[in-house]
Figure (cartoon, rainbow, N blue to C red):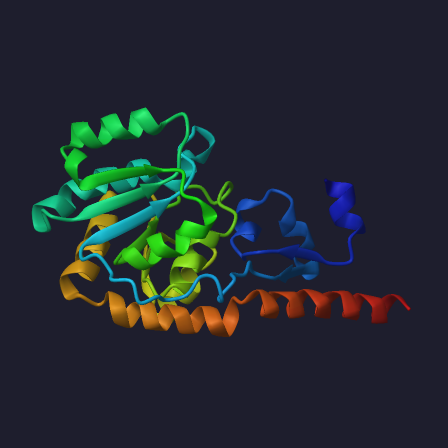
Length: 240
């Protein structure tokens, strides 16, 4: 790994947080270029399908490796949400070896009837799920394991506000554009308050509009491709 990084002319990372979490990159900051992930804005876009009031959406694999996505903390945070908004519904997309564990956890917390585990969601159905929810939640807890959080981009592209943690790649822009709310990782209280705030203030539409604009301006695959091409062109000029 060290030899590869040392010999590289440029090192492309998808988010600046990697500089803080990686044990390798700090020595090569002069080579670092940030090129974010992108999203297909023609596929993921707002639709005329009706948003279901007080509906939350989480998407991720439900196995041991992907516990870093933070579903456990989201479920615990919903105990307070239920006291304030009894009729909320969380849609959980994804399957895996921990499905039964999460189902039992929801039951033990007292939110069994508020959580709908949808299992695997086919790719062509994802835009419908994003458009159905009032807010998308990605409460990731590990800066080492979390890559960028493309699902957050997909939700924003569909015009939905996002609640996420400060280690997710989109977090800084999310705060700057007020297209959602960023909370500290593993902070169930802050997560609860963010969910309640968006649902009670009915601010999801305005946030969603800002989120779609953010994606169109900064996170299309065309823009990402242009940034990548520019890096290669600069390297070719330097070496020839």
